[in-house]
Length: 300
Image (cartoon, rainbow, N blue to C red):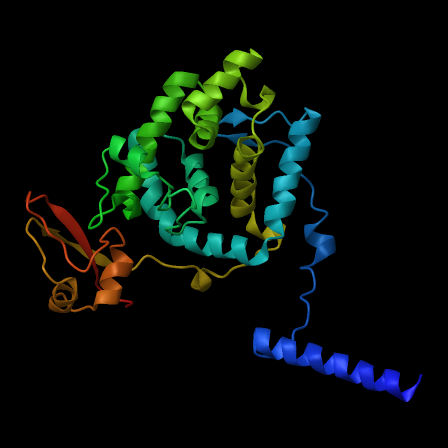
């Protein structure tokens, strides 16, 4: 090698090193794939169902579509791990509401794929764990304005989602199609049923997103119920816990939520974390509606 080439090589290495420090705070080393031979070659379950409705794995494309979603989600290490941790906190709120309305427990995994169990905001304007658009939320009885947005209220949003699922089940006669319509819309799914002259989700040719939708639910259900099989070993102490709390019933205005929080022995940040549906610094309540404000008792 010539001396000039060596100097150029040294300069290139220095640039890469500095870039790594600027981007990551240290030198960057590409992450190795997580136990590739273990995760990439797991066997598909012999059978799987959504809400008691069997998935026809004997159909080639159905089997491949499930395989795809299992592979993708089993190897989204951080995302799937976080979802498993968050479920320990969110599912105890969601599950009894599903049961109350007679909606199968599997629908909690629909919330997982909608939002990863956080109060997400979509580019289209859907918000909350159940990802309601403003108009749909209002139609389902939720308050949505600049001061209060009940799409961020897990209990109320779950109840609204249940009402949708029941309406969709009554329309389609299938929980699987009810779930698919949460993504594709009742009218959109019904249009395809009429055009294609089939009545089973697994027989329909749908848009890419809706076609993958139920399979994503099935994949997260399978992984979260059998976490160790897919390489996720998590101690109970590492799961995110629900904090003990009390509810304060308020039927008047609160002019300063920070002052109100202090009066309850917490601060503004903790108040907003536990009541994300409060969207302003105050709560003007001219109609004297009764709001239940959650106040944590410990762990904050």
